[in-house]
Image 1 (cartoon, one colour):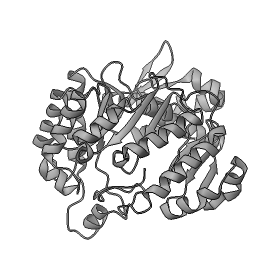
Image 2: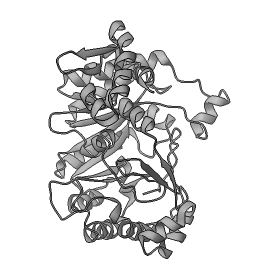
Image 3: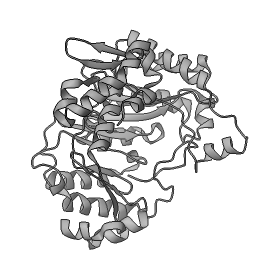
Image 4: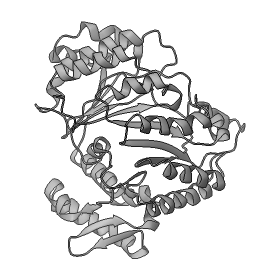
Length: 382
């Protein structure tokens, strides 16, 4: 849902603060859901995720329309066991909006808190304030949402170690069962990127990242959370099924402007990041063949080489607590690439960045290795 009330200073995702095309985009979403159904296997999907932008700006009528299209196309059969997540911003979670969500098939909320600190929120140009951030969690839990995740950002120029410690304590005191926490990244072509480039604000600090990442792990694991992926922590039974699908190579279908899809084998597509073109062209698309023929008007495509698949597997597997199993490398990519990985990991086993479970030949990042995960993964690439 590629619309937002205002632009966060750090965000480089596709979105628009102009809502005039909102109805036309919803119309196009409904059409795309129908036309592209054949890109996923028959039968209900295991998870549905409303991302953005800001899906919590959807009205009750728009949400009903989208679920009717999802069910009508056979993605979902009404089973309450399907994980259905909707991203929400605290400022959208009025009593009325929460009632709409509680009465919908949505059974998991991901709330973009980012910080419970007012200085952080103003620096990030978030639309909500600290009071709304704190109240949002309590309100949705009171409405019956037990499967609840929050996003937090650490390492921002305004986020002191003391601020970060308070954020972590508030999160666990509120009783959420999933936390996704990310280091603030300065991206080009964002307001923050411009401020850093011009010297208006200092760049981020590697020391602050390292310290606050360590605080994150210590606090959440002590509170009973499992770090099942580098940036994701869950209480038992509350891992994100949807995101786990991305990390394990399952096929997924992305609907809407800027959305990405993967066939589970070698084809990746991403939709045009242009709301006006998306809304204009999709009403003219009636079949899967017409979508393919539309080509660059609606999407870009890449075909992954075997080495690309191998490299992605190494990267995502090392980020997860399950690690990289040599037997799985053999099965997916052959003995030569499996031997290559084992050879390249020897130095990291030796320096303590990687732990080797000898019996099952599984390589996992150590606590020390988590901080240098990208470098370890790159060494294992082919």
